[in-house]
Length: 200
Image 1: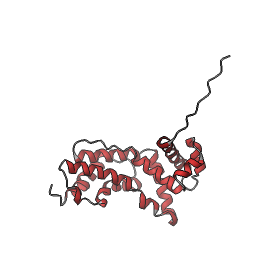
Image 2: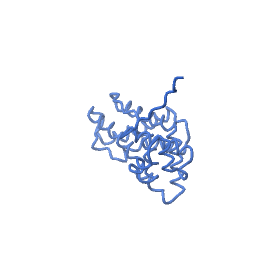
Image 3: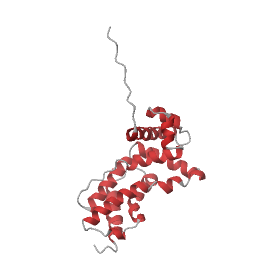
Image 4: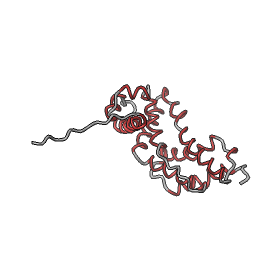
């Protein structure tokens, strides 16, 4: 009688392992919430050792934040469309799509926990926007090279305003995030803000 094939396991390393852990953390946040989140459960779901999780994220706070940030911005669309307006619409559409998925659920859980506990109130606020700011900076740099804006006039706060408005609508206004909202943020807020004082 022929033996059934036994599954073979592949040891994941580096970026592949990190992505598996972050995805597992999002799933565990959805399942159990932040308070019941454990590094052991994340490791088991990811098929990783506890040590491999702790080496990268020494506390569950850091792990939860990293998971949400990666899910929201790690695969966002930064394609160069050739124009500032369409670049902005593309990145906001991509973020909106991610908010409407599993990461959005995890984000709500993390935000609720950070608000409920004074001990956790600062970590999301202090670190949650850095990745989206970096992506918006790249869009601004490309627009500057095309002569659409003067990059030197755009502050870090101005870079973050679009994604921040989108997250605020998601958390307090509910889904779905409409195309009309995205267009309004781009046309009525970001472009006027970025072009004010630029001479464009």
